[in-house]
Amino acid sequence: MRLFLRILAGLVALVVVGYLAVNGAVLVRAHQQRDDIAGQVTTALEEAVPAAADRQQDLAAAAGREPDAYWIEQACAFDTDDAGWMVQSYREVCAVRSVSAWQVASPGEGQSLLAVEGQGATAYDGCQPLGTVDKAQVTYVDAGTADGEPWCTHSLGTSSSARGLVGDRAALEPGRWVLAIDAEPLVDEPIGCVHWSVIFCDNPFGDRHAFGEAPSL
Image 1 (tube, rainbow, N blue to C red):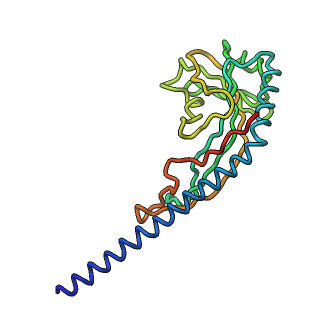
Image 2: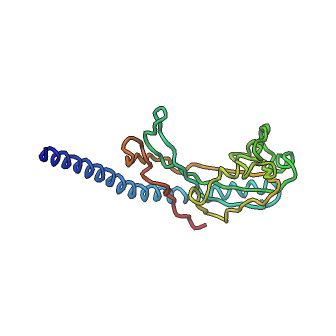
Image 3: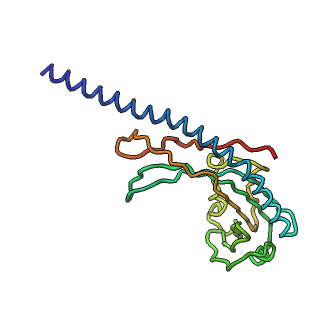
């Protein structure tokens, strides 16, 4: 019986060591991969940021006045490849995003200001999609009608999912705004899984995104 318990303990120890070794190796590779993707993002930003700044300036020129708030940032998210309800793998997806906001009195003023293409959608939770201008998605925001933060500003994420490139991100003051968001993809890279929970696929990057370095303009 004692010999059997020793053998069992040895097998358990081997399983634990193997579990730690495999997941540890995944984390080491993930650290290197995060650096590699960050390098790709940095390279992509060299062209993407000046182009985004030009489009933002064109939008302001079309509106006939400077935005009351504007910035350009890199925004990243962890998407998943799923099989049914099970996550099979994670992906790091990043885009360069420019945000321009003007204070307005009504949705109609917002549409006229930017000559929005398309029909406005139904308002929900303080936000009313108005259409597009070139590639920018234009939304009317009335924070006073939202239950908490309007979804269209909440969806811009937090400092953990977005990093500034040009200008400073501004929390929009209470009031009525027309918001123009222009996003262009930078990278979409598979990053795999780490299996700390054994059965389920865990994110090998944790909550740390592969942000790139801002180019000098």
